[in-house]
Image 1: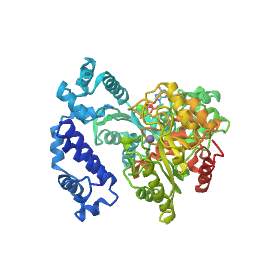
Image 2: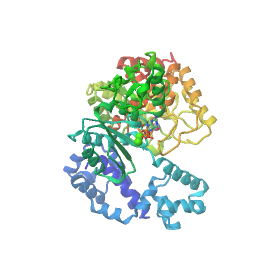
Image 3: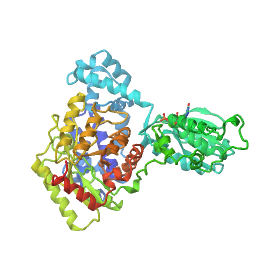
Image 4: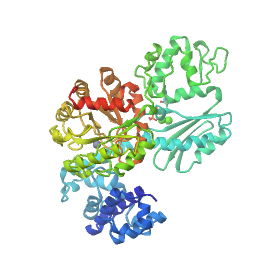
Length: 585
Ligand code: DGT
Ligand code: CA
Ligand code: CA
Ligand code: ZN
């Protein structure tokens, strides 16, 4: 079991002990142990092997043994017993925003709450507001959190859908009767959330394929089992449809079931204007649409063939939202969309100095191994104390470490020294100019007061955008997909201010954020906005998020020229240097 898994387990143990109302000292031991592992710079394996775990500050004797056991065996009896002693219903409560172990303990002890349902009742009866340390505001927040959870339960993050699809597709393709298999629907279009997965298979023998599909691991319910169409539901609530079609229909069906509906409507209109009828079955002269295979039917050996037959440029799935892509394809005006390979680095990343899980060196080594030319480090600033934000002194020490690492020549990847500076509630920044001046760049982000009214929040953000030291605006809306609503902002005013001050707006690639939303980008870059796609990495694997960011960017019609981190190291150096000399902004 690796370090990050152990960190998560220690946090879970601490939380479960809190739920049970255990002695705070005992609870704290696990949280500080987790914290200690997060900031441990040495390889955990070496420390364990040399028997030095007990010497790490923050890790006591009892914890040493547990960590060693987890590390070597991946199991811990204490954890299993603890899990068994906490009712599942109480653990579910952790999914409600604003509820942690301590509050859940109080709810359980004082009100007998043991599930989301009983919590909802207690809130409805006003009992939660009466509890010490809760109040009406907390009660309202809990209720709206539960409501959101229900409303969102029907959809899933694209990132999660991708993991499921990545397992199902190879499985389908390995069935001998399967000629082709693709995922379609909103997943293929790269929507930030997905209602269900849609799989499409070409085969002349559907039965074994249907059987395989309905017997996959993790299925809790088969909602349909037909000759050529089946639907299943997995234990995490995700649903998937499978359709099997004859090979000659495959690309028509793939196009149809990729959608979106609006795109399909526009495509059918386009076909009709040429006297053709387009459907999931094929493309044929309109007067023959009732007969299935007749002379005049267009053959398609790829989706490209369908677009070609309609006199259109190929429209990538990302653009198929019925937002003018068919018209653009008619006049050869589709953009050359950004690709993952175009990205040469990124700017918004955290290390163990604040709330990241990997050290500066580990992050650099990883960026280096991914072939990136540069990596920006932007740990939190001091007001984000819950994220262990850096004060001036620690920031400047980090700056020295970054300069040293660059000069050491150990990595090919160049480090830019930045900071994710909090935009305080009035729009003032968390650091003085004299401090920010020393950095290569600044990401300015809102992390608190997310529920301010639209005008206050818009003014607050624009104030930061106007600040000459601010290079880019981080996660503008603060949304957490399926979890937390976006802040209310006047996005057009923010975009206009960013363009006027040549401030970059981030497309935060964390699959839960994808913020600024793709729906705003096309018009924004037409007006002259520059984008930066950032993983907001808090650990090495988060660099993978760039893929989700690129999908969102493609949905926003972005080309490499619209994105700062497609530029070369020298071009980025020049861009950041110019900002610092105040030649722009
Ligand atoms: P989702 O699952 O809610 O995230 O969104 P989609 O787009 O994956 O929708 P879904 O799964 O209901 O259907 C997949 C595609 O099939 C959809 O994008 C377009 C096509 N489709 C489904 N129903 C209709 C329909 O009634 N009319 C048209 N034109 N297309 C449809
Ligand atoms: Ca779907
Ligand atoms: Ca579907
Ligand atoms: Zn942030």
